[in-house]
Length: 227
Image (cartoon, rainbow, N blue to C red):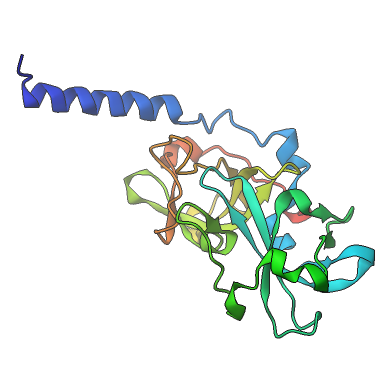
């Protein structure tokens, strides 16, 4: 039996609309959960001193690598010559990292003897070999944020991750055009591996949110200054 193409296209559009409605978070009731409030600022984490065993300083955190759904995969550590090499990025798995109690340092298992295990990336600074579906924190931080109807809203200030390594929120600084919305605002992360129609795509230099101006009109600022 032949299906009318117009009817088939309409059915697909309807299903897409249902999927979008099902996946869209109600920003009016959404709040950053306790795991997020107890978590870490990625912007603060970048630049933090990194230590190897026995508190031997090996460099600083250069970047954070995320999977498509916002799970932290690795930290990139720039050795800065501490280990006798030119400044070289090394990759250490998130599960092997311990964050200091005041968030002012990270402990890793990296030693001079184990350098090969963590990869030297051919000694090219900043050129981390990520897979197509992974992305760096610095690819999203600083990008413009759009609302529905292509309304330019502001820019990404920071990312908040839980202690378990899950990206819990994107922190946005609104433009001056949104004068009433002074300060910073937390929004849920829409990753392109999470089944959302609106999602962060590392190929873009902007982040689309599935909300309009009226959806965010009464949001309260996020207490970002403590991060």
